[in-house]
Each structure stands twice: as C-alpha cells, then as structure tokens.
Length: 111
Length: 118
Image 1 (cartoon, rainbow over the protein chains, first blue to last red):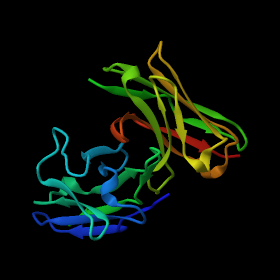
Image 2: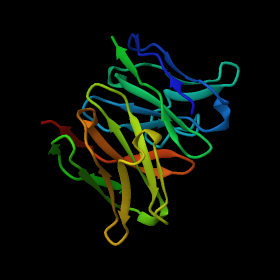
Image 3: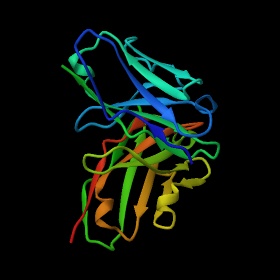
C-alpha cells in the first residue's frame, strides 16, 4: 500500500497564507480523491476539503485544495489565516480496493 | 440532521475484548457505510476498516485482521466494532464515521475512549 507524507508542523501569522502538502509515496495522486480533515484539540475531525478541491457547505472559501501530478502531492491552502484555524490537519485517500490511508497529520500554529 | 452517537468510555484489561457502538440518526442507515478510525494519545488518525450498512460487506485494515469485527443492526441503525485480544497499544479514542463512496468521511461520532491497562 502507499503512504501519505505531511510536514509535522507549520506556523504562520494571522492574515497570511499557509500551504500544507501531502505527498503520495507510490501510485498517482490523481488516481484517487484526496480529502482534508481539520481536528481541533478534544474534538472529532471535520471535513474542510473533499474530492481534491471541493468545499463542504459552511467551510469558508479561505480553504482550498489542489493536486499536483508533477510532485505527486496534494495541497491544502488556507488564506487570511485566523487564530481559529489553529488545529491539526490530516489528508486522506484510498486505493483501488477501498483501503483508506491517512497522512500523519500537520499541526498548524497561528501566531 | 445527521448524528452518530457512540457508547461511553471503557476500561479493559490486556487480553480482554471491547465492543463499541455507534447509533446513527437523521439519514437512511442502509444507504451509507460506517468506518472506524482510532487515535492513540497524541498520535494521528488510523483507519481500522469499514462496513457497508446495505449488505454487511467489510474491509479491514491488514494490521487488525483477525482481531476486529464490524457489524451493523439495521433495525436500530447501529454499527458495532469489536476488538479482541486487547493490548496496551490499543488504548485510543475510537471514532465511527459515515462513509461516502469511493471513500470519504462526512460525519463523525464524538469518539469513545478505550483504555487498556492492567
């Protein structure tokens, strides 16, 4: 099976833009959809991006997702950072047998 | 509104079994799958497997094959996850999540803490 690799942590100032990467170890990143989940301390995960670049209703358009076949990676970009965006973010995909893979998670600090 | 409500925290001894429930409401239970995801203290999310509430078909993570069983009771719209031969490294918060195919999770339960300690 493949792995999804994320940076352990990123930090940025309020109002700025941050991008979190998620690199697939084998197989094409474009072959299966990528989702992104936000998890605040003590809470269950919630979806911020599904199917590579779709935003659920209620998620601000400051959140966007993309994939890049040249680097075999997906990215979550958050613009106009707010302190409330501080959380852990996980990418998730699956293989042709519907086995699910999560990235290791990225801790976003907004300082 | 869609809700997944899980059973309460459990404390188990090594070697024992635990069964966690996840009661769904607000949607047609058999139209979606239910997946189970766990998170050890301070660690990331680990997918355990999923079950189709339509036909009971299951898909388990290789690491847990032989120790985990996922079932559903369509009469009560409840999904269950049983984990056997518990070890200390099974201590985690266990989440159920509604599955949209291919495989993404749109609603999550509140989590159930399972502590394995002698």
